[in-house]
Figure 1: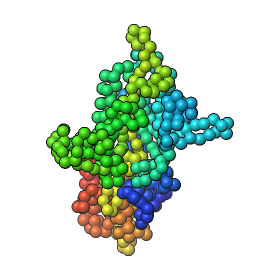
Figure 2 (figure 1 turned 180 degrees about the horizontal axis):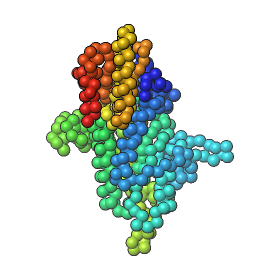
Figure 3 (figure 1 turned 120 degrees about the vertical axis):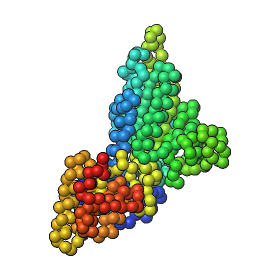
Length: 418
């Protein structure tokens, strides 16, 4: 992609009302556009990042046998009444059709997935099974804030598993927990596994996955040396005490929740009278687990964890491109022709190698403007072609996460990606 072809251009100024790093940089860089409080359009480069995150999730969930489906966002009132949540979930968006029938916009999908899976599961031989989707969710939050960290319309991956025994559920629950940690690691995040109460979902304990950041809205007790953490609301320990896992000193910090997992037991299968026949011909109810990751929130959390005062610093697996190619202008026509020729060749060759390249090809922007955009957008590797670098028959190479730059010969550029 070339800068001059990009629909959405970065702005020189940050939004005046930004209350977090992700709200500031994602909007300023032209990754997202706020349409109203808690509702955003995802623009080309931002959508690329979001899709990268979603694909990481798909790869890891597919590897543990989960099957992807897509369920409707428009849900019937009747199903929500069966679970008793139509009048209990205060963030539920409700709407009425022209025929006076009432519906809900999907805040979560237990009311859809349970009868859906129940229509196919008839025997113990059909279990265990797990299905997931990546879809937009809607919640009537009183106060949307912190950019894409808390919205009224947002992306979520929700996974649901069905089992014949508690032991089988717990085994899969632990597998998903470890898979989540792999997902977050690939996204460049060091997530804390936080024990918390089940809330509206279950009376049992559940687990949250938190990223430590001042923009977080949850108070957690965390160890700086390992993954141990507890939500302060149910904490059995205090700040300053020794971590039971590694002996480190526990700290009270802010975190943003990027995922959660719950043991639902028979709460929803009983509501929909979902049953299977066991090996002895006896009718039983499967037990459920549910596992969520906020996909758009995850993008915001990555920005909160990876930025400096100049802009974003994307981890390589989720970045909108692999290389940010920058060409500087000169009044010397012969040198400018050489710069353009080298840039076009490099742009073409890197793409043939499967690399995504964002080329700032503007001929009316200063070096300062272009380098400022490179820092703001935060693509991992910057390659700069200038009159100065060509004197050395090379290009200037700099990692966004580092301050040092070096000149690399044109013949050695391919080695950067080995």
